[in-house]
Length: 148
Image (cartoon, rainbow, N blue to C red; front, top):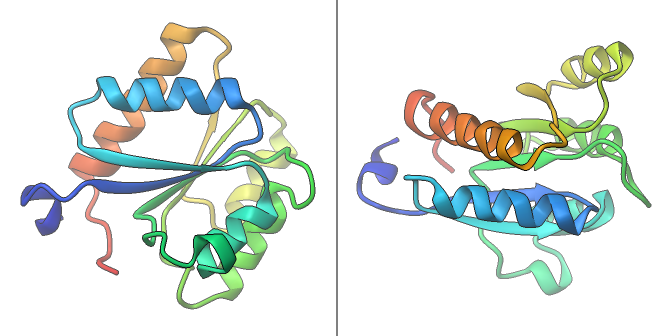
């Protein structure tokens, strides 16, 4: 938390295949009070390359938190959760599952795979803004996150 008090921007990785949802998150974060950098990748394979700093992601910063959709092409969010939990360098990054699924099975499985939070995306723009603002307030002002 100390570096946040000094003004360093929070690094967020959003794994989201919907350009509309990524844009909504970007707008919501822009309106927020916390300085943040949102990096978006469109599928789980890209997410793992980003997290492992492979190829075009070699110079990208390690995220402080991950917003993860479950239903994506190539590698879905459940597979991403599984891969992250196998990697000691990545397993401490908090993961907020932010998905359209309200399935009890998805909720239970996400928590079984050590997701830190599960939120069903609202379809309404104003509600989506409120959700992202709530995430921002909780994770970046209340919670103590581990340093890199």
